[in-house]
Image (cartoon, rainbow, N blue to C red; front, side, top):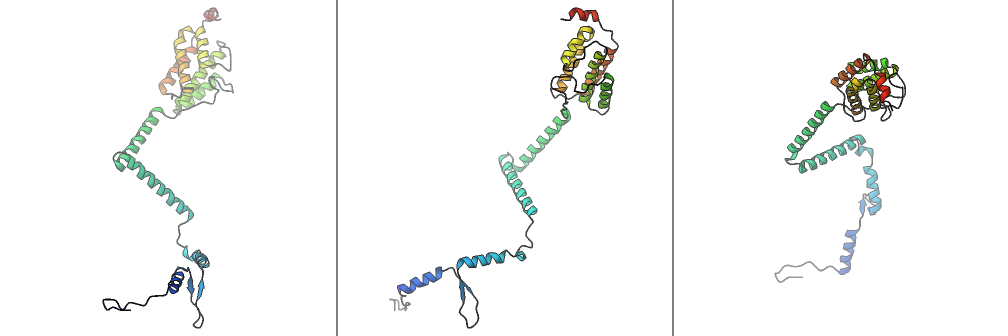
Length: 247
């Protein structure tokens, strides 16, 4: 067929031939090589994909793959990187600003740790002065001295307070009572030793702050309590005054 410009156009293909061509192009087939005298073999899409998966699953294709641990580490560092990028994007100044914030937080934590120290708690029941196992005043003093020598001032102050009260019980100035608190011991001791009422109350308050308030002890507190303990050991009680004020 000739066009007006003199160019011969290809003959029109029948509609049936066009439909057959489209169907052939859409068929998911895989031709396989056959012998010279045999027609090519065609596999449908499903078996061809399964064959490809089996081929790619062979170990020869995975010799240089990362191990499970390496893949987990890679995922972890990717997560850290994403987190860092998100934080740096939300922080004024970007990455330098984020680094400055982290350094400031570390310095603040170090300063608080140096100033306050590690909080220490005792295993005694809440509110009581002594634990389950009774010990003598001398034993409490030796334990307090060992704590002080090691710089454990909280434990040293606690043990010295227990030594003070236990000494008063051993001298029959206080009745032995397992559930007694430091405040109760100070109030009862002040009746027989009125000249030391104020330092006794201060010692009980210090014991409570260290034991139940979480405040760390120091060398000065231990020195004050040790001096009070020695002063009480050298003081004669005023039993008459105690009997008059007793309920």
